[in-house]
Length: 135
Ligand code: ZN
Image 1: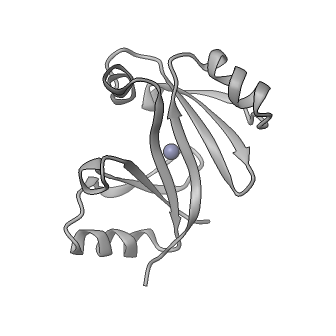
Image 2: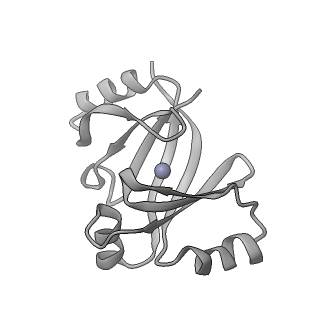
């Protein structure tokens, strides 16, 4: 049976990347793996490894994307939590079977080639949950 095998990353929405890096990289000392513009997600995205997991910083680059609206509505802070599963299709079946609302019917393939899907916050206590299939 499909199971959760760990936390992959925690994503934070930030209004301004350089400002955010002053805490996460410069003060906390997390290594920066690079900042990438990801037009498909209308965001600048940075990953900072922190032991077994990573911190993802998301800065919206257009005023009307989902991430931009999230920032306007809820302010900076935690955007989503990403868990790894050993079997994404199995996990999707399990969640659908329990009436959990997913965002999109099928998994998509993310930037790093990982298969992923989001669970709607309505089904997860107000938290946007991302699921990655572990490599
Ligand atoms: Zn993520």
